[in-house]
Length: 364
Ligand SMILES: Cc1ncc(COP(=O)(O)O)c(C=O)c1O
Image (cartoon, rainbow, N blue to C red; front, side, top):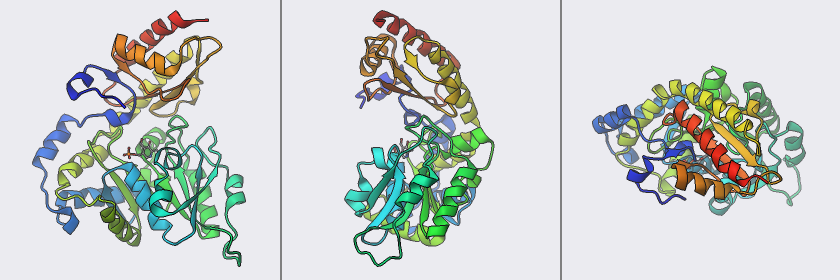
């Protein structure tokens, strides 16, 4: 993790993640002016307004403001898997499985049944069908399949979009087996904007959705979970026990309201910049990427070790030290760039030039 201070980081071109976005001027103004109350008592009008707008946006009965996407996923999983021996089916590359410290197991005693995530972010229907436990059945050996989790857009698969048809097909499967469907929609708005459809359409067959305000939508803090009134009632109890019951959180919700009203129109531009970056990277010898596969704001590349004698973390430190560019390189050859509203097309061109310049010094 970076130890850059706020004043130094502003001089950097930061494409490590879309979580680095800072609140816009209008967000800061709205936060300043927000009408607030104690949200644990249900008294904060701005939080209530955000929750009602978000429920409508996602086509669900109710919504809840939570501090983070990780907490939103955890609360959703725990709410659905509320009995001993519950199991959820999810992808081996999903954020919930890969990046959330196994919280569902540690804190919720929920067992994960993992299937392979496909390059397009989907899980194969046939893979899922194979691992659904036979229930009801008189066999005490097995956990009980309670939940399937999907992710749209898919972070580790490079911002891939799950289509309405695909999600509905998993929804059908869930209905057939009496299983709930949760969507980790941290970047659902990116998918909706790119497909030019309502976000609600993408999650119509999901029992719950989590959705981040603090990524490309620029809010400083916060996520939303949505589902039925009963689901949200249970979720609210869990939010409290996890320490997520906030008090005058209308200050944060005020920014969140602009995240869902003002920010979506900027996402298309992020996607276009991501494509410019991908096309440029594909032209640099030694970088493996299929530019046409980039769909939203995430670009993932691999450095070809047959052609280059530099690894990803070293390239990241060179770009930072020599050019004030921050990229995400936590694996040996893999690099992730995430484009957001603070990144211009000129920034992208600069990044491309400096990567070319650095790699030229490490050719085999
Ligand atoms: C797909 C996905 N889900 C959930 C999260 C977790 O969000 P947060 O960082 O707010 O906990 C992230 C964060 O990057 C994510 O990419």
